[in-house]
Length: 372
Image 1 (cartoon, rainbow, N blue to C red):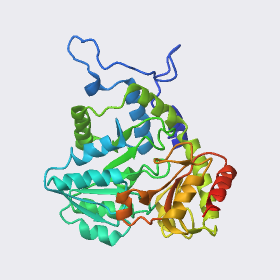
Image 2: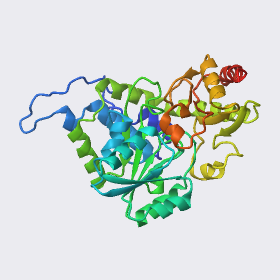
Image 3: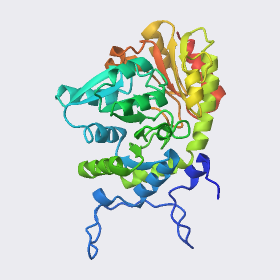
Image 4: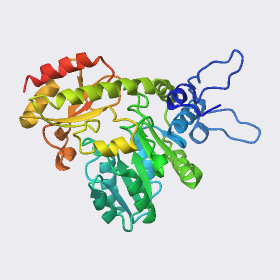
């Protein structure tokens, strides 16, 4: 049989073996304690359960590696930063990126455990200059919320030459758009809360490696800290993963159309979306990615107050933090002090495009932009 396409893997991977009268889906297992066997002491924190194993199999097949799921994206991030790096390590990371990883790295530096070098990771020369002596290169592509695309093959090769592990936060992409392991990255991180689960109803994270010592070390860290997701969460995440290809297809189509319309709207001064030919990262995304994602960032004319009015005026789109669900969400990111301090424009709106009808979304955006 020829290898399955990602759309089929998402639907079929991680299912129980086909047995007469057996269920098609893995059920919800709600027990942490199990009866002793003759020569083992089975316990959830060390051995997981069928739901976790099914989700890890499906996600691993999609990403082309071995997956570990965690109780949140930050639990997964912490497993890498606190579990793999000895005291005195140097981490190179993005100047403008997800606030959670930024705060965690900053706290580790404040405690004297790490040295953090923050650079614009889309500036390849700046990253190369910062890699000397580094133990870890932490990348986001696209970056949050500026949607910058990094030159992944070049940075991975340079980081490995410097002796550094490469982690790629690929939450915005999903494995349908980018598989960082294919470009040599060592670890892929996902906030599975977002696109993978897709329904804004759970917290979960994931790390994908090629297995080996790295995978073993991360699994041991998860066992030690007890950062396992619950049975209901894994069931919902796997159910959400089954429709990921359809959700991404619709959301990306919507995003492309809305980004195009926003780019010519008189109330909008700039649109950041790599699918636009005018975007500075269009060529790089076209070369490295299998799509352009469903995240748009755009600047509203009139500054912070005008952007806030847009967020407060939407009716169908939700004014909320987070992203990657079936519903569209919008937020002014510089309302958060850390984003404001890291060069995020005061008028920038991060727009997670959902799967609603594109004309309904445009009608809502249009009426909100008229309030500017």
